[in-house]
Image (cartoon, rainbow, N blue to C red; front, side, top):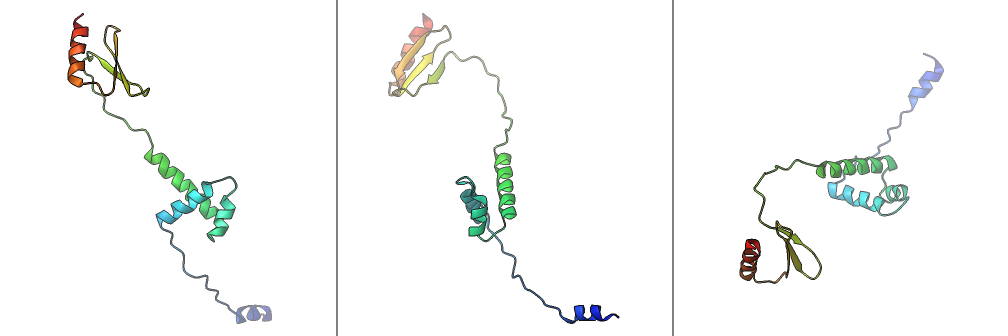
Length: 128
């Protein structure tokens, strides 16, 4: 063996980096939310929590993918029914209800109207 290879193998240092940290999902979400709170907060947030910028970015991508998967459109079963005799449209102006009848007639009542009295009025209007 050459002398330069012997001296290179003569010293061996073992550097312990410590255990790998485990982050709970709640901690990840909190850190990612903190990084999304304002512009240019990725590096600052990563430094504050002593993690790499790349790890924070991967957590952000994973969280975005999860939220997109949850909000993905799904199919809803459709049921074809007979046309109703009246359609009710709720309006937010003062708690009023507008009822549009099939022949274009409209009845506008307060949201606190007596339902029995309203039913009688609608019967009369539909017969005309």
